[in-house]
Length: 322
Image (cartoon, rainbow, N blue to C red; front, side, top):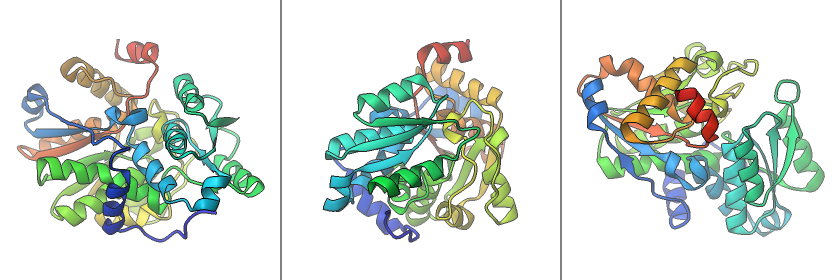
């Protein structure tokens, strides 16, 4: 039901960049003298929390759906997601006139569920601690003839996510290091493809929650490690394993995978809010929290950080940073 799963290349990232132009925002790159001074670095923040629907996920979702043939467009799309991929597929489907059904966990943030419905998608819920969203998604796809677009392990999704790092490098020039958040690896793999092609000396770091360090375990052991659903504030990174497509790219091009605690995430959110006046969700602050932990090793470097999302209920945001 999906495209033949071949490894995406940088040529696919370039094709995605052309395909999404005019629909997906070219997000700004933000700077903070205070943060630079505090870390002893020159930090360039790629502001994907200012993307349409509030996260980088719109890039991959729109790129994937824009490649549907007439039969796929007429039948519709199904996706599973805790929130940002859900909203991204729902919005991309609305833009392209495609019907969308989204499988979301019962405990997904209320604002994310409401936004997904507001974009016109039908929402089906499940229990993330006892049910398998991938199996539910496949069953719906088979039953109704829909095309399943998974949140990260799909060549068109990976290529679309890589456009964020491509824009960042185009806008600010070569960077010594780029930090990207890590859930299933779509953004990190796309970032690695783009950076490796444009500035091969750039070191790429993935950052995931301490409670869900399947990526780090996989990276260190050389095989995809599966974990139980982690309990972390970073709901966008509660993935259980890396993808069959994302893992080999990460193995090949990523320098290291770091982890941060929920407390470090909240600290990073607080600093982004107080210093830069930016509202960032916990998952969205992963890369910045990871950079803060390793700043000492990167002294003086020009560094890129992808802020991946800003979809958080304001009362929850206020409670976390209070």
